[in-house]
Image 1 (cartoon, rainbow, N blue to C red):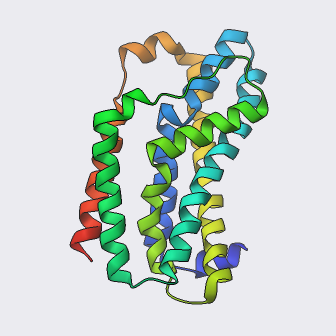
Image 2 (spheres, one colour):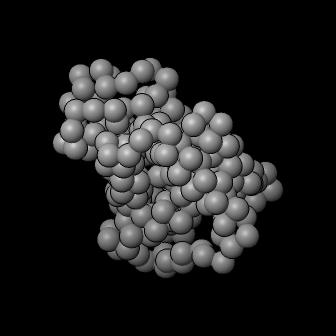
Length: 211
């Protein structure tokens, strides 16, 4: 699988997958803040570490939904149509998040099970449009080889992205738990929602411009 991973497309395409994984991992809405709060609430590093796998699993499920959809569309629709379709979708989602995103916060208790954490993570990633950012990167790899090939690429995309997100989230969560604490985070907060909406809109505009 790893050989196929690096033969399937250009280095820039896969760098985009890794870059989006780093950004998602750093985004507190994708799970590390929840894991840190859970660890601090229970006074246990183990509780923090046990929360990370289901959070990663839910994120992966959401990402795979979007990448596999793009893979199938890319194998059957003209490339120009997809550029316009995905560009409009990205810009539209950025506008929706700006206007209504704050109304759709998914709440979950601090005693959530493995399945509950995974479901929360999948819902948050989907509502934020995390998978949308990977859909444009899928297009160069959807030019042939049949449905099984493009679906295999989507699995590789989701796997690499999820591993990157997981490692980044774990590192930040552990640093926050061991050294920073949530009090300092409140005083030095970065508004990832604004960054994310800007990234969605910019990517959408680029897709339309290059279509």
